[in-house]
Length: 424
Image (tube, rainbow, N blue to C red; front, side):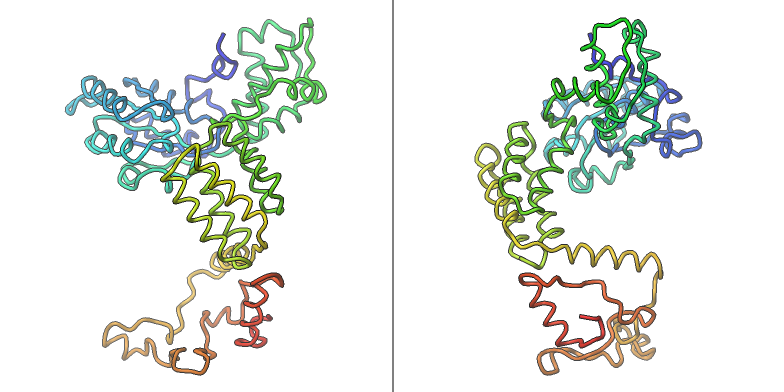
């Protein structure tokens, strides 16, 4: 028997739960679908929010031939074979172009993505790619430029409860059981916003009970889910839970916890470049200038695992993980850019002070662009006080180095240079 999530998968936009911001009746995507004017798109969002379902509904609504590939087990030959079949179904001169759906497109190599370019550019197929990863990093620019990125969000609490009620009332198997949803908090917590995970959990609980009446409570869910739910699934079941535990262990300076969660991901078949990229982000977000070498090591790790791969790359990942976990920590740079962006949103596009402006033309020089700018290297210690912020926010401090490790020296340097201006 198919899993519950498959049995209750909707086949029409009106039955699709969630993502109102992109498929609501007045949305641009909905209108494009209904008018049969769909461009190639990339569906980007967390697991279990309806990317595959939406792709299938789109194809059925458009009444076009539908081809599906999974990037996990498809190579360049598979892509070319599908495109050849699609060109026979659609052709260059037929109006109805086949839909090619590629799940987890971020796992395609550059050569695999390159093999799609011609078909997408010439309109042989309409591509729908699905990814849990930021397409800016994972999809080659040439292909990304030919697609519109559609962002799907985590399902809301109301969406998830609607999924549960829909499953109980519409699935032929569950309809034969007398099921009452007395409590849903445990199911919702386990799901983490993942609809597929939610329905899997419900099915596990229901299948574990052989009673004429099933009353779903939080205690019942905890009892059966702890015994039965899969611990790790790289395709999405606990993908984000495991990486969250990994990152938080490093941030909390526990190399033992960090390397354990690393082992869990490796044994689960996680892409080493995905892990290395998270380490690269952490090196700046959680360590930063407290230990600038961390970013260098993390970047070298990212480059190395993309060259080496498994099994040897596990050693490089472990070395980098333990180093970052044992490093001094600071999130000052992370806070600084957040504060600066908040200021930009609040105060808008403030004019650049004249002395900081570029003056490439005679007219600009006549207008005073660059006047009174002081070239720091002409002064003692290569420093001279002058204003570098718009006058309206002069003196605003975004970067505040911590009192620990190397950032303490940075704070002393800034205090010596700027005195009380920024409150260092």
